[in-house]
Length: 273
Ligand code: HEM
Image (cartoon, rainbow, N blue to C red; front, side):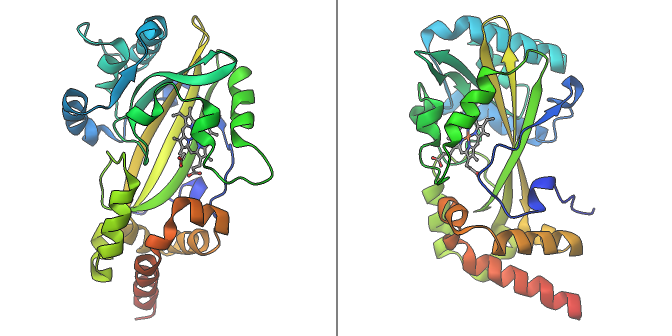
């Protein structure tokens, strides 16, 4: 099957908002991450992946109902509604509410976090969450907060970002573990072990409570499969090699450099055989 070059791989990554409107029937279905649902039940049952403030019940109920309606599923009544409905979709589900003048996380299920933990996230504001991002001349969290403040009830917005990781794990609260594995990994294993990790994120308003529902779905694709496709290889090489330094540093790509270089050379050579 040909690798579909998503829009966000067509230019080098940047720190940008990049939100586009989607339709209700494009929001959660089809769930191309459904293979993760079995593992997700185990995580929800055994790991600290769900957290919520005690007073977040109205927002959780509204979020669970809106998801249930979209996917045509009922959810269990013996656990928090957001946790119960999250069992049916591969996406992580995060509720943000404006409290004390700041958008903050009040309830979430976080089974495929890109290198941050549930323990770290509860109660954090948009500002604190995005503080580590070296955008330079603008403050990302101010831009995001403006969008959140002005979201219309009928709008569903979607954005993508991506990185590369060593292994095909979805549940990755700690990026340092993967970076260590990459540091110690043999370049001959890069073919099997390097994965592009795309995050597909959506936001929509919960009109009754005024909170926001943020979803994140992870797509993992072997980098070597991307590089086998001529067009995709060219886009990937361009995006990797021309990513601005602040983005490379933030994504900690130096740990992967020798592996990616090796793969790009390998697949370039095969082109000329
Ligand atoms: C739709 C609005 C949002 C936009 C435009 C946005 C944008 C970004 C961008 C550009 C990055 C840098 C990562 C990259 O480019 O690969 C980032 C990282 C991050 N975002 Fe957001 N974000 C949004 C909403 C949220 C929300 C609601 C959360 C709540 C969980 C969140 C949590 C994070 C975290 C934890 C990171 C990683 C920060 C770190 O490295 O420590 N974002 N976001």
